Length: 275
Figure (cartoon, rainbow, N blue to C red):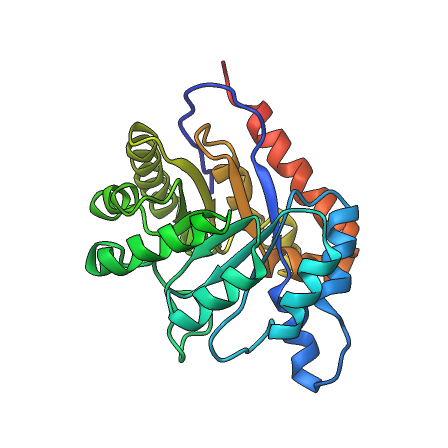
């Protein structure tokens, strides 16, 4: 199958936010302290991660409160604190004062974040959250689908950034659905164009992978472009936040090499964008 993307102009490569949640997932499977997600964050920063992303869930299924405290104390690289829009989480973020915050939807029974935050449906609450977090110096992004009404609501809420959910594109990529991938790329491009017209900084993430992830399936050829490359090539994207697939790749090549591989993929994709 062949995937392609339409490009507009050449920009600097997007920053890479490395999500360390699933290091904590492995630790929590057995309890105890190993493997330590904070140690992974330190290694990721040394390996060139531009941002360290983590999600403190209400059920604490991976990152824990003490991890957050240790991350703040140990990491000089900017932290991106993902959290639901709850009073508990807003209070913790205000105490932690991370450089970046990404407000996300959260349901207890979901395996991972499914869909985007409904900013339209809870605009007053999200607006208040954005103001609270801006007051402690955090740059706020809202994690949403590429829906025009939701993008417009992000601007209304006062968030300076939007992170577009790439899960549907990633799922189509894994399924080998080239038509679906193209449809999702077009939807992302339209959303990015609208967001930029509203003055929003534009990020993306969820489910993005490398072609190396296909190597475990004998006889199955990977796509000509990885899902990471397809999104990185969109000129409006300034940050990519990647976790599960990057940590999975690190199981085979090590965390430093995994970060190098993702950063190289992002740079190659952006350099391939015609002027």
